[in-house]
Image (cartoon, rainbow, N blue to C red; front, side):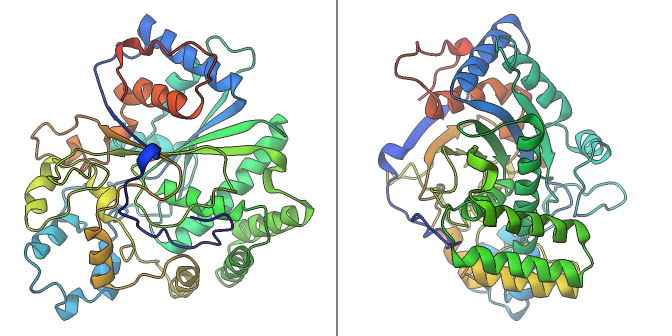
Length: 436
């Protein structure tokens, strides 16, 4: 996507990413928190610190109770009730695998639904329900904090942040403004400034929030930013959401003063994020997309997913092809906002960020089988999470693998290797991991 992308949707290019693409596989590593594991993580911490990273944010949502495939939009507004799915072989079976209540993803006890609050009580409750499946748990972040800081002179801040998990345009836009607001406060509180960096690891649709952030951080006065902020300010006033109104107002005042975050660079790693919103390369520093992907195609195009019906419905329950949430939660899908006011605001944001609507357009986007955006480095990883199990909680259709405790060292090594490697530095030892 171009500089000054102005919230354009990704063009879903099927072209070979070329030198942007790297391939790897999760190999056996040293046991978590063993001496070898701690040593490798400590070396990664040194590399991050030397590169100017001062904060690592583990940013995620919830899989449970959130319509993670976005079938509500397809069912209610996309034409399925009018029979648009007829005549497409295997499509009804695929949709039944995606729908809440039918897809095997459990709901939360008590039926809790988004928006979720980023507080300790909610995060602990989420850990108890989901464990480390698509969820950066408190023990995960605590282990990362201790290991990365073992040999640095100034500890890296390691922060867990849970976004509201409202899987629609309005929810993601609100989360983008809230994230920027909290990062600005963090930089001021900890005196992080010009020339220093914040690294965000964003799982799933949290990565879409960061795509919007990259556009908000564009140094030029793009028209889409002012339109988006006006929409959010209006919604905050009508829906009586003072927290959102205050965050928008602070962001607008900061834009009047100069670049957001006062010269701090935001580096982003996405983990299983669907290809939807376009990224503005002028708004972020380093950018890496990691996708759980297995090469099932027979045409040699290893950078594309396999999207064939009805075969895909036999592969999904055991995550045969990798991350099916990343593949299918594309443009045209979404959860539905809960109120009329939110629906109206969601439509206004939709008109800014995404040109696709309706069931047929969703199917078109899904069938393009695009795994990676057109900006940033791309890492195709076989996390070896396909064990033949049809228990969805073992893999969540390939979307759970990225945040497992036993993948932390692998992910960290790959991030350092692809984003922060120095020409003069010795190669990472890797604790038994062989990268691609």
